[in-house]
Length: 427
Image (cartoon, rainbow, N blue to C red; front, top):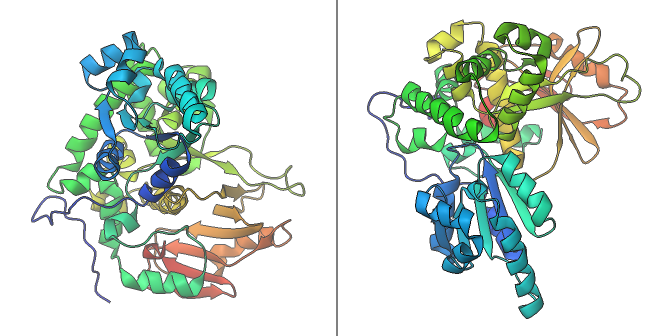
């Protein structure tokens, strides 16, 4: 079947209209039931664009603390600021004025006492999770719905319905047939990344976007959270992590490579995790195997385009033939699966498995007391030997349900009973 999906990067772009976001339903649900909704997520994932849409659709006011004059009032006189911008209102970049949280708490509690219903008063957004969560924990526990926003998902780009990924072969195969990706398509998406601006402006050069992104992130976001004595070292740290995406996190190795202490590496990593730049995938263990499993987490960049830029991989062909290809494909697959859950605010446990005998399973989903085992590969043709590690969980405390190997094939095929090879487009 001919591929019907193409990423246009440099020539003859197809101009896309604003891409509908799956997470909007969850935000609107929170607005209906909670007085305060907090939308978090990394820089440039589309929070401001979506909130402008909400403001227009639901009649909210809108103010951004990126505006220096508004920020000054919010910091110096938060009560006056909230009188000038009465509820219902969206306050963007709210982390710049943490003093607002206490005042908002008083306002929403007063309305609850006065009329009995205080839902839908404030929508707050911000990308600095440290500051946001500190304010929420101290001031508004129980009053706020917290929504995490990711970069675009494949389903959002393709304009199709997005549901939490479940290994259901009949549904997976039908879904994969709707959009067939070539190998070039997949590597193009991986290098391009999934930030909305790259799709709103498809003529934009990828390297230009990420160059500006990294500079702004370090100068503004990171520097407001911690004191950086050496910004070049921090950038080198980000570049090193990009080169090990999809691999185990070994603090000592990173410390030696960058030339800073393990304590500093741990602090810097916490900043990247809180900022939605990287995530840690914890190892899976049960009582029967806890002594034999690897206990270090694996690290994944939350966006492969950013990871490729930092690793100095600027085009799909270089990625495809280089040593990072397999790890970037794995990172992309795991990110896309996890987005299907976060975009629908569905809970599940996500893990990887590796034991002392070097048996490894790339990704495990634990949901409704059932495990799904998923292997991620950068090739097209595999057989039952490529999923032999699945048998290590035959005696799991949980039922092991249908499992799969997701790879660059354009058609699904069976590997053994209960296990299929599936195309990436099945996610």
